[in-house]
Image (cartoon, rainbow, N blue to C red; front, side, top):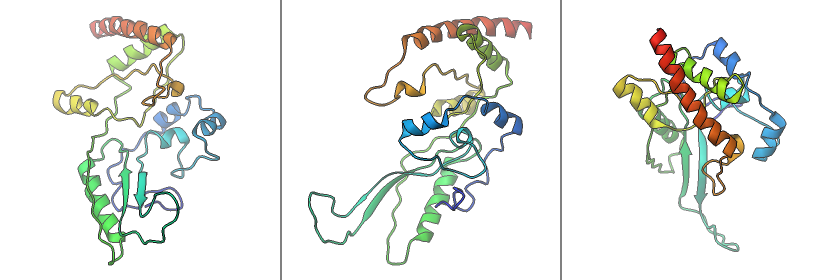
Length: 225
């Protein structure tokens, strides 16, 4: 389901993908990225992905399709010369703004079934989907958050998009018409969601200070406007 350029081959998959401005792409690529360390941390020899996009862009503004797990046939100890009657896979797609999870699910199912030979029966069971969301970087609240982080950490923050799933952000926008402010205080080395997940005390306490500074700054900015 990928071509030689890392492009997802499902017809219509990219139809609704938001086009990110050159200015925002340039800004997000100002974020420091030690590619050698990045590859070492992941245990890979080389990065790969959709042609024409940087590693930071591939993990944020571009959608993905990944096989999360695959199994079938005899997997016990030793050898057994049997032919598997079925195989299974878990597949996920990280979507980006303007893509509809229900529409993408249908496109995936239709394409997957179209690629199967007539001798194979294909069954697809959707688990769940979440609407992608992005918060604007030109709002009063965003600028207040930027000023707060600069004051607390002593460095100007760089806006980044992330591939994580926070479905409530899209719901807040859809139901309340309100954009969220997402401020991250963790590090890539925090091993989030793993058995050894941890969080440094410096970032913990500085994060508390940042939130307080944000509330103060946002109050000032909304009064001024």
